[in-house]
Image 1: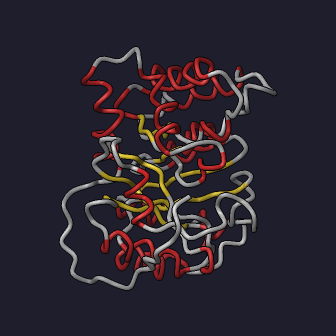
Image 2 (image 1 turned 90 degrees about the vertical axis):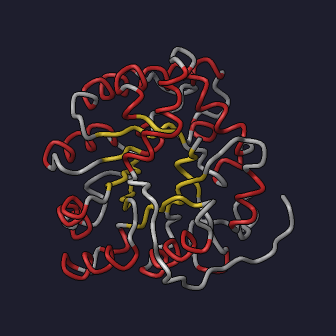
Image 3 (image 1 turned 60 degrees about the horizontal axis):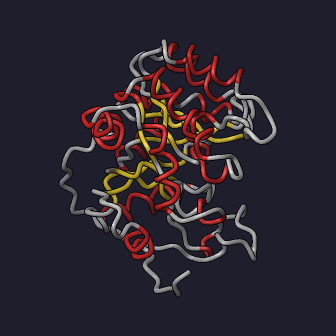
Length: 288
């Protein structure tokens, strides 16, 4: 299994969203990630940006992947932080850091930097996936972007951030999923459920997952733990276990595609040869 959504950070490196006193207010290293995956039968993970908000984070992600190639199979950079680069310099950055994807995040599509959105054609030209983490209308936005750029793979994080079933109906989200599934270059990432659906019975969460898998099929779905974000509600194992509950209607071959081969295709996880190994934080920290 490939865990398609993990983060690492040095809490002293400038992550303004991390609040003192929270479970996230500490450094999480590659050693911590490896320990959290013990016994989970993982073949590796995709490292995703953690909103440090500067160009240096993209370089750091690249360095981490090179430092830990057996643990980190690929990485997804921060597109928001590239808003001031322009297409030419951005293309150079892609060549330098070689991301498997670039993530754009915000409250909505219009709330993200317009100059960052303007870089999407450069990503499509280089075969770099666009990953979306939008808190409003993520699924229809992904479908619209994918339709405008048919050569671009668009990954929707966290099932498109549907509302918590404790407070709202998923009816509109379900219809958005059905419509987005008609656009063949949209991929759904089954992640973030442990935090977003906290307090919701597991079978109801499994119904959300099953709806996505039924609409998109196993060749367009992936699974991620959202570790260590998930630690505010449970372990990495618990997060992956919850994400997998909605796969019960699939056969073994289909489950394998959701858990591994879709990620291999979407992120282009071919073997890489790269001797440009840069520095990496690898501090020793206390166990949680």
